[in-house]
Image (cartoon, rainbow, N blue to C red; front, side, top):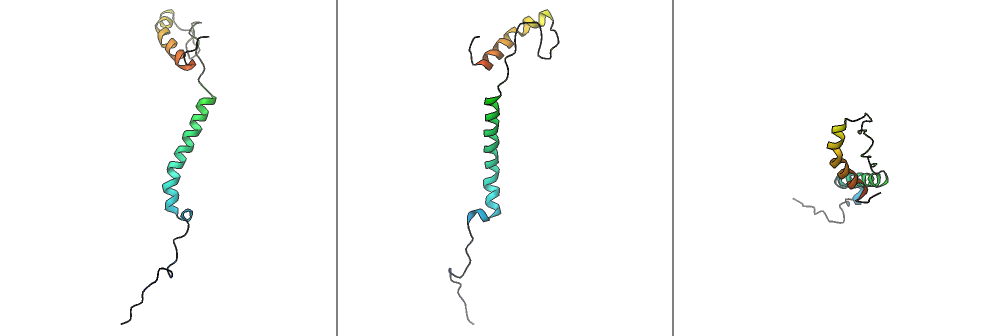
Length: 90
């Protein structure tokens, strides 16, 4: 019985890393998440939420608010505007 040894030089190489589909699955998923996160950050920085005026008796939907509801929403509107402007006073 004759045994044949396979030399390392005789076996084909596995090739470069970008030729393996499993590598694209491992790198592609997290890569897409990073790209989506950067896109979300760019959108958030370029299109900030507008400051909602607290006076005028109009709520967010454009319908005239009741007098009692406007007074009750004042602290929430003040806090929301403070957060949106970064604490800057107009």
